Length: 83
Image 1 (cartoon, one colour):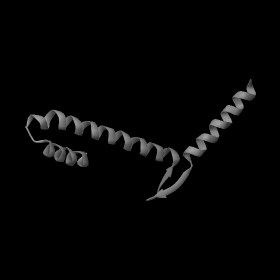
Image 2 (cartoon, helix red, strand yellow):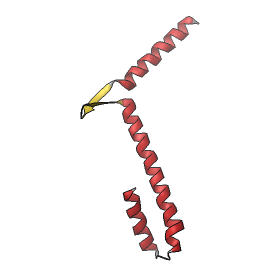
Image 3 (cartoon, helix red, strand yellow):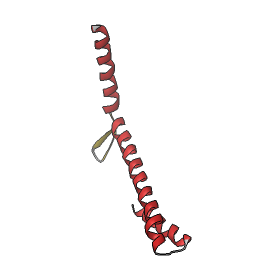
Image 4 (cartoon, helix red, strand yellow):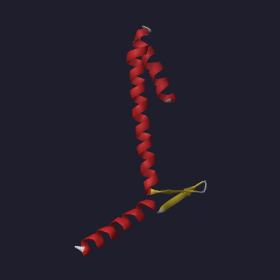
């Protein structure tokens, strides 16, 4: 049983080293695999939030102003780019 625990700890240590080893530096700041995964995850979250807010504004707010569809889409696109 100790052998399994020891091997599991070794594997987890090796995985930790793979994810935290610096791959490259930008401006003196090292980037690892885990930081790149985190960056991609945060970008996806920001994209989802931006699109959700844009759709909400387009469907709730801009319809009340009685803009035609093209104007609503254009304003929503600008808001999406800003966000």
